[in-house]
Length: 284
Image (cartoon, rainbow, N blue to C red; front, side, top):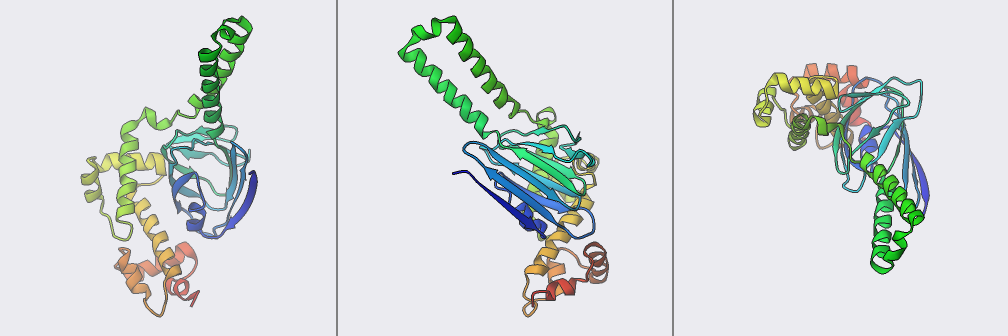
């Protein structure tokens, strides 16, 4: 049954977990108060999303096997975003492949929209099945020029719509996609532990220069900066959820690879506008 919802967010973790069409990891790359909103409209065979967020981000998304959304900017005045290293300006769109993965860099005050291509695939399957039925039960109908032309046109339109949804920028650079996918997997496995660039490169089988190049192209920053930002947001999330009667800032910081508490507290305050202890005590 068709329905619609609108949800607002002040926590990037809650925002990233709200995306049903993809498993998403989001990193906010600038200081400030995070705000976001998503409107979802689910029709019979078409799914539409429209969203906005206040701060610039870097995200890694792994799409569901049955989802191939078209994503596009919805504000002509906003700066370009970058999807898999390709700049996307207002008026342009990104077509993702079924079950694919991609990295995206978005500017502040990003307004975006998307449409699912599930309807296009459903239409192709329905038409294909109908033509098979005609060929099996009443093949003489297909001999009529007008009928054959109409069927051909409808099948061609449906096929083009689905093919457009299977094109991915990663198909042009498969090695980069494989390396970055494995890099994200390593980060997730060691999400509460420090990762060192030499160990990461050895595990991925690439040089430090290659990994820095891939990260700069897709993430807009080097791998060490990206790892640091991920860990800073993870430690903030841990402080937000922790019980101050059972743990303290030092323990949580050390668990996330921040051994120098003084330096950590300074950079944490610069990034989030409050000291770590204030985050920990907020819900006490």
